Structures are given as C-alpha cells and as structure tokens.
Image 1 (cartoon, rainbow, N blue to C red):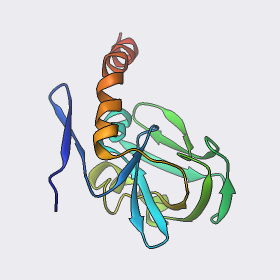
Image 2 (cartoon, rainbow, N blue to C red; image 1 turned 30 degrees about the vertical axis):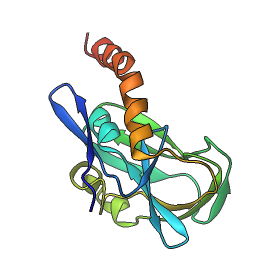
Image 3 (spheres, one colour; image 1 turned 120 degrees about the vertical axis):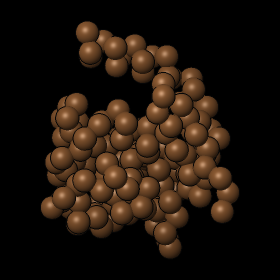
Image 4 (cartoon, rainbow, N blue to C red; image 1 turned 180 degrees about the vertical axis):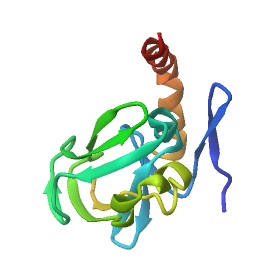
Amino acid sequence: MPEDLVFMMGNYEARIPTDRVYAENHLWLKPDGEHYRVGFTSYSVRLLQDVYFLDWTIDPHTKVAAKREIGEIESSKALSSLYVPHAGVVGEFNAALLDDPSAINTDNYESGWLYRFQTDSKLLTPAQYLELLDAGWEKTQQTIKGQIN
C-alpha cells in the first residue's frame, strides 16, 4: 500500500491516505463498490476538535445538488452545517455514528466514515488535496488565531 502524504498543521501531522480522492470541503471519498464512502480528513477533524453530536437532515438515497446542506455536526469548537462535496446521491449513513460519533475523532479514515455517496464529479487526487491545504494554510492559521484572541 502506498505511503500516506502528510500535511503539517504546526506540530500536528494531518495524514492524507493515497488510496482515496478528496473534495475541496475537506472530505475524503474512498471507492466502495459503485459508491464512495465519505468521511472527514485529518485536517478537518483537527480543526473541529472533539466531535460529540451528529445529525442528518435528509433521508438516505436522496439526490442532491452541489453544496447542499445535509446535516450538522457539533464539536468543542462549534456547531457546523454539513454539505455534500458535489452533486450526486447520498446513500446510507453510518448509523453507528448517530449513537456515538467519537469514531470521527479516533478513526476518521475507517470506522468514522459518514455516508455513502455516488457522484460523477471530478475529485482531487491526494497530491492536489495537499496543494489545496498548502495554499490555504496561512489563511486558516489567521482564522484560528482570530478565534482564540
């Protein structure tokens, strides 16, 4: 298996597995049969910090437009809306996360997956996602510092 790419967020290593593709809204999409399994990247989990609540506002197997809000997540940092990465069909949700979303914090690339998704949209390679993180890191740090001050 190819080695993961790594993006340094200060002293924190955000892993970018090379066995999947990525979306600009910091979700990973791993091929799973005719669907993708979707989850949060290490980068987004680090920014969210401790996730403790997850809720979906659409039903499984719903056709969605790009940037459609499909749920919300609450963490120690904020309550945030969840959006699909592209137009497609949201399949089933990871039901285990509704009872206990802690797998998002501890195993975001495996058992912490969010939902299955079908799309024909062009997605980012791991290298392209790493470039996206590099390009936006300075602005992200300023935002983080603004939240702290």
